[in-house]
Length: 474
Image (cartoon, rainbow, N blue to C red; front, top):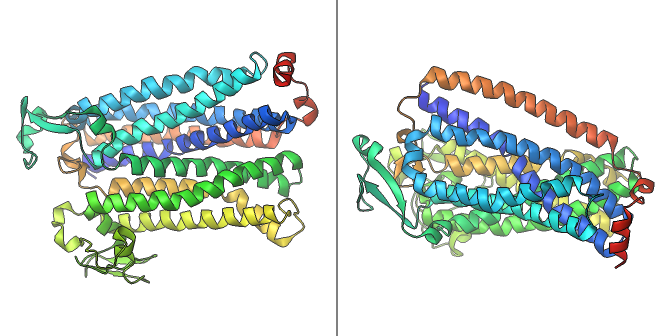
């Protein structure tokens, strides 16, 4: 295996492992705001008890997210030095903004969130909770801005040896060390053609990840007949966010698909296995791409893709046959990963509707009923579904833009460091694999221990600091 493929595998592995945690932080942070806000509004100790329990889970997830995210920034300099030099003016600005406006905000208030229950008043603690949740969202904003700019570059121009070159210029190997992208308009970079669509879809998916974590734990407790009141209340919070986030994912996903059709037609063609250019393009719910004969097998919705993109069957969709072979993304992987994401998304919608129906009928906690029992059983494992959808969606976006690392400007093969060797990447990949395995085992162990221990008893949660009681009465 050559050094390029090894470097890509290493980055894919490290980012996929890291991406388990930020969506959970964003989603769980949102639920913490809702829970603590309900405590301030109602003074019901149940909500205080729930907020304290889920804050402990948030702290564990946040810690793993930070530890696993640092590695990728070093990889930019070790494995992808040419790429880092090429995009440093733009990528560095976005990462600096993420550090200043997101990470410092999130980590600055984290200590109050985790350790300030008995040391500050309830309103200040709630403010800290809001700031941590806001910081988690801001972190996603700047990372998505940086990645979206790679997908749809805007607000910038290409320079070689300090001189501006036209958009049509094709980089030559001898120019790589002297070429870089330069910002013309910072806000043009931020609001590049795909950033808002991708940000909205990513945040909604993150809310779903947090919601189904809460649903999973609540369902587990109900099935085990433990902490019934806590479990039922947590389950309801999770269902509210899951219901709205799963529905919103349809809207944000539709908007993203329209953007891909406009800005990255080759990616859309690969996502749907579309070979011929023309109107009335069908939509494949699932299938298999025959790369040799350039056909896609499986059930189709006639005209569905044209309707999805433009609202009319006469709309022309670009096919892969009109994309030069060296500019086509890996079609099979893009097609299958995209459909995994969509299929899991619809499964999440169905599961959240099922739970909402049981809640509306007042039988959400009646485990002797077959429908409730089966929902809770599926609910325990539902925490895996948003993770699968998030990973599949991320890989669809990244694989679908190949062979470009910066769309239309820099190929992935040209972004590799000139001096990195295959044996060095293999050694570091094995090292990261071992460390991440240990981190994952530790995460599962600590998560399971916190779940098995369960929340504090309501009697303990009644023992609130006098400062909290005085402020809550006020």
